[in-house]
Image 1 (tube, rainbow, N blue to C red):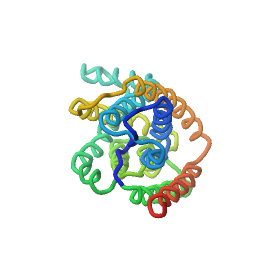
Image 2 (cartoon, helix red, strand yellow; image 1 turned 180 degrees about the vertical axis):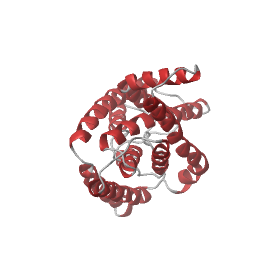
Image 3 (tube, helix red, strand yellow; image 1 turned 90 degrees about the vertical axis):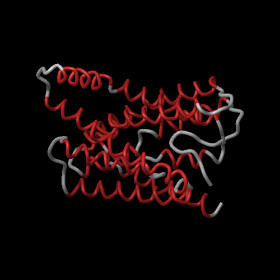
Image 4 (cartoon, one colour; image 1 turned 45 degrees about the horizontal axis):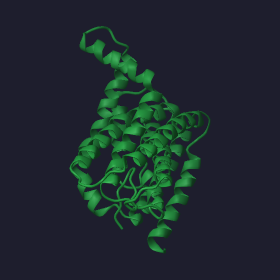
Length: 283
């Protein structure tokens, strides 16, 4: 079974209000929590199926919606980084910590872009099946479990560096595998290289901006080249739901990660893997 990944679900061409709301909720909730959006969309397609121009439009607009949410939430950080970049270009003194963060975001984005350009066609043609997603979901859960264990036996130390930014960027590239959560991979990766859970989470959210924005732009170009009637009204409803949901999820998760571990998401991922595996191999 083939399916469109990240924020689209294959469903019937006539879109209804409840379909748009469900898709917006799925995208808004799963984009930033350490749970796989692909895994949830495998389940969502059991109920909903959209094809053609509407699917591409949903992909593009929902990516813009979630990008707008994380940009709004971290607006102060982004404004500060923009000022740092301008001051650096003007050869004025800058805060070194902010400059390091800016460089890390740039460096951390490169691996996923380069690897995605090379491997994305292969992944699209061969790996986007529920069976593969179930296996990756289980592997991702075990990876998060290992990160938590290492975090306990070797408490985090040190600050964000260019090397750590690149390493987290390599972990982000793992999200090209259907079933691997982008936020989960970067948060767990950040913990493994020595960041606190909160530091790793904030960096993960900021690192999501160029990737999700780039995906949205690419899908918009794909949409322009696709013939078919787009139900923009329903798509904008889904985008609004996705935007508001993403804002709430970001705020919730930052508060959650200050006090708790990734263990609830480990067990949730294992359960989701079992459910997707059941749908793939038995049902």
